[in-house]
Length: 317
Image (cartoon, rainbow, N blue to C red; front, side, top):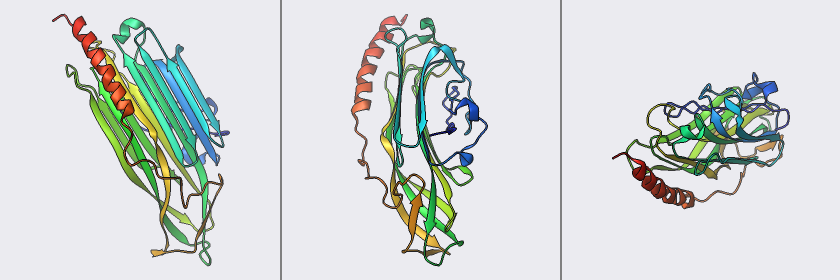
C-alpha cells in the first residue's frame, strides 16, 4: 500500500485493549483519504503495555509494544503482499501472527500459547495479523452519467476462533469502507477461555456479508476491506494460568462479486465497472470452501490436552 496509512479495526476483547496500525508519518489520516489503489499486510507479536484506542484510525501496531520485546513485520504496496511474525519467548511460550492480501482476498492469523506468562518476563502478550486493500471503483452505464446508483457486493467471510484458560482470548474484526463512511459494514467476533473450565471455547464463522455501495455513475468511489485477527491475554492481574488462543481467518475474506446494480431503484443490466487496481469487481474471486477446514482447531484442541495436564500438575490442589 504505497504511501498508505492503514487503520485499526475496532475490536474489544475482554479486559484487553487491541492495537491498530498505520505508518508513523500518516497516523492522523483516516481511510477515506488514503491513496488508491493500495494494499497492506501487517503482523506483530510480543509484549505490550495493554494500551490501544479500540477505534478505527487508532495508533500504529507497534506503538503499544515494548521495543525490546516485539517482532513486527508491516508492509504496504499496490499488489499481493504477505507478512509474518513469531515471538518464541521462553518455551513453551509461543506467539505467532501471519497476514496476506491481494485485491479481493484477505487472510489473517494469530496464535498465542502461553504458560505462567508473567514469570517469563512478558506483560500483556499479544499477537495479531491484519491486512486490507483500498480501491477506486467507477460505475458507468449509457445515459446514466451523473445519476445516483446503488450496487451490492458480497464478501465471503470464513474462519475459526478458539480460546482456553483464564488468559486465553481470541478475536476477529472485518470492516468495510465505502466513500467517507468507515466502517460502513462491520463484523466483530471475540471468544474467551473460562477460568477453571478445561474445555476450549470455539466458534466457526461462515458468512456472506453484503456491502451496499451508493455512488454516482462516472464518479470514482473509494472502497476498502480490512481484516484483523488478534490473540491476547485476559488481564495482567489474577491467576497466571496457561492460556491458548487461535484466530484463524486464513480460510479468507473473499470478494465474490456484485449481486445487483441499480439506478433510481431499477436494475441496470448494461453497466460496466472500472477500478484503479484493475481487479474485476463484477465477477469477483472464486468462491471459497463453504466450511472452514478444521485442521487448526483440531491442532489447538490437541495442545489444550497437554496444557490441561500441566496446569493440573501445577495446581496446589
